Length: 272
Image 1 (cartoon, rainbow, N blue to C red):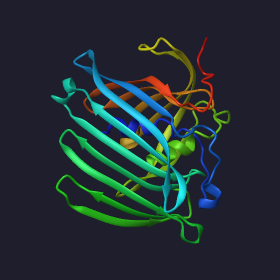
Image 2: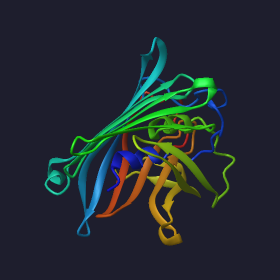
Image 3: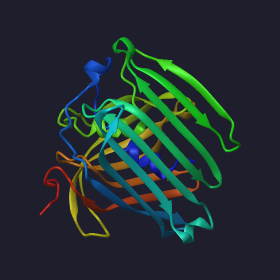
């Protein structure tokens, strides 16, 4: 099953990015500052009834990596005690990136329905080209390791999230499709998304209405399009996800932004 952590990260991968080596992939951060915190309420549709499922939170802080100043980001998801009886989820993701938004390290520790695993990726740039060292530990403790080299930019889910937030959305056309390369502990895969257009959305918990950019992540089993997530991104310089509709194997889930703290810009997507 796809974790809620994974899909929350994927929702902001909706921006074009440079297919190049690190020097060309590096970019100015225009969207966030250390100290930003986002929290979400999660709901699952259980036998036609929407029930509270838990919470998710993301935070960004300043840190050091091999003596250089960098950003450290966490994304944590926890199901509620009520939902734990049906499906327990305890996920934590950590990413270290340079101040010019290039990935350095990624880790995900996940306990999803009793299935525990750990993904790790180390990024380096010999001769200016990305080199990945990947490590995956499965639920039985077995470890697999591999390396991956590329002339193109490759990101983990968290570093791509932070990188994408600084892109301009004005260049999108309704119906446009993008393919994005993302690495975890044992593979590098392309993710396909479609831009659906703009829409205003009123949050149930806070009553705030946001002007949003709407996207969908899709898969193509047997060559047919299958929607996985529909998500709503604030149409302002912060580019934060405010709503997610998740089509999971066991049903439908929704995530709503409950609170934000330390945003870099005024939230101009709020409809007065």
